[in-house]
Length: 423
RNA sequence: GGAGAUGUCGCAUAGUCCGGUCGAGUGCGCCUCACUGCUAAUGAGGUAAGGGGUAAAACCCUUCGGAGGUUCAAAUCCUCUCAUCUCCGCCA
Image 1 (cartoon, helix red, strand yellow):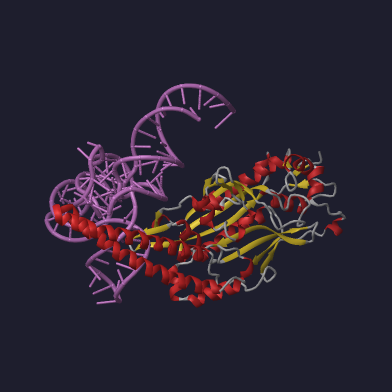
Image 2 (cartoon, chains in turn brown, purple):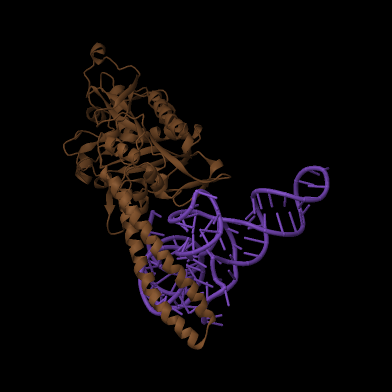
């Protein structure tokens, strides 16, 4: 949620941001108009209400005819209080609705444009020359079958398309990846968390997933709960409605959770394998930090992501995501894209967003110091999205026969195994 | 799933039966000042959030788990709902 005061003071800045995102600028004017209406309504209500209260005090003290007289007056007032209060409520709802429709103000540094207008910040690692090695590249589906790690057919049989089973070494690999991620995160000061993957509307709404992203969210109508698409949701909402101690910041959490995504509007995209699925598990970093620290914290989260990719010895590049592709909550976003040999291109495996105060305002999370109460920033970043990491790992470390080399960092978590062998 | 109890200002609690001077008392914690060589102890004062308003104040409004209702007036009465606890049943 954008700060209303900010919109009043600097509507043009908000408009520029909306423009850069390719979203409505007239919405800003609508907000301003609704704000005026609301303030007028509030003024009227408060005036009547104040009179009602002061007369009410007199009623309590008076008796007899005097009391009767007062009561007749207050009865009229009561009607006015009711009607003006209703007007306030209506104006409030309208304003809220409009303000919630505004996306976060983009960071000036973010490249302006659509999905393809990202900036490549760097490429890291060495892509293998499979031809030179005399290896015909297999994709992760083939490799997964050869080593008995992924069973897509049965996933489809049991749950439908875009579902899978991780089997044998695949299942063990997930645990190893999670362990490695959790271990690393702890050394960086993150508190490990296993959050609920089913949340109330308030948590979903507060994190900004019921806006444009709503069609990708699974909703359990019978219980009015949502399946989260990322641990970001329960981690952000963890401190919902709280006032934190400024000196306790940054508060860093690393959560492991399943992620559920409807993938509406992705029909026909990445239909093969486990690159794009309705459910996967993920280790996610989340940070509540002072506004002034947010940019530096964002760099740190990115660095942790890169460190993880490097530990897995996966070649990748980092992109600065363009304004039109940020999603409503992020002011700036960096994606780490792993090299996928079977597709001969980079594909997103992790992503880190600086949501500035957008989420914390919606979730009513603030911080208190001697200087008073101030808003805080929230940031999130993927440490390890299991399925996509497996794709990158299998394909980049495949051997001529279809077996897969295990990078050194993972070996301790796989009983020292150096390879996933053919089944 | 059944029966019962509870939800008040950071924490603990008073107030709820018998509606009005209760946005709300007390203790602890915290902050400021005084006293003291320092700490402790003691004394005085302060100590919710949000909104409106103002140059800044003053001041006003909202919020007693949440949502409705009754009433001139609701922490207090009614309805629904959520959470927690206890007992019973069931279950990994």
